[in-house]
Image 1 (cartoon, rainbow, N blue to C red):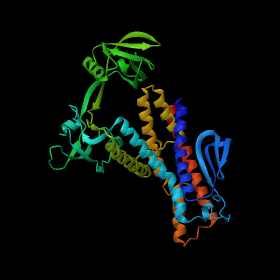
Image 2: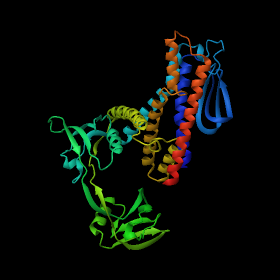
Image 3: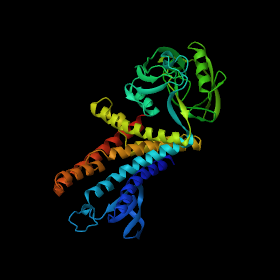
Image 4: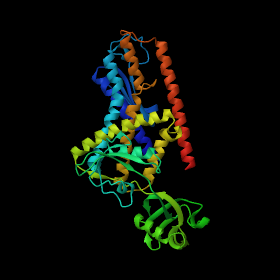
Length: 431
């Protein structure tokens, strides 16, 4: 089911994009031959006002075919290349624009339903980096590591680009009205104890599903197994993560803990010792929530802007070598796998729906911006060609040259898709 939902979401993104081209073409009186949902052989079709509307076999993608788009020699004022440059530019730009609008609308719906975060800090947790730096509830964060904070996701992204052992610099306007100041969140190394396992975020059968077990747990003799459902530790329910962490830390490395798990649907009691490890204290930065439709509008606009900023920031880091391609590139398989994983968590419907809506918004804005890049075969390159045509006094580049540019672009896009597919498969196999 998760895979099906992932494919449908990807298709919806592509349909929205092509719908932008189609609607703008209709509004500007372009002659359109076909608008198709999905790809492959036709399942059925109908004709209305000389336009063929079709539904095809493979449930992925969509396309719109303009008359004369593939043959510039057709002498018909309604064909694509016989229309004015400004009209062609609007039709080409409408696809990415509608993706951006769909992302903005998705953010607005999401924030209107579940609320949003404001740039104002909530009370920092005791012992955190934020508390040590003197941050207080109500302080407003203006920038993170010199990057302006438009939406709170800017903080999450910037924090994700630096190691947890590195300091983070915040530009803050204090709640007490004093002058804007710079605050440095400096990590502090500490010692603690853990069970030596990773668990699924959502509760399963009243406990936590064990996803992996550290070979060093229980003094190098693990007693917990992958797929166990952790129910309690020393009588403390695993459903209360804060209390569970406190219980493990209270036991330390020497005391044996009583651990109750469900293994193969049988409740089993085990004894084990905690694993000592070194960690850095939490950043401790959390933001206050906001509600209301008008506040959601501002949050949606700022969040969309943050996604645009992140897209260019990621591309810059990719080309500079600051991040590895395998950490930055993902294709349809990776997106479908991510969506499938969210659906498979069996969280409450509202939580799953909100998460999927957030993913749709993020990808939609990203897709809109990416398609505007001047990469051959993307909409951005077509806009560049129209600009070149204008500079040349209305004379287009030779057809052979344009075809070569498009061919090179398709080769690059296909190569990029193959690389993304390889990285996606590697991530799935190695996790």
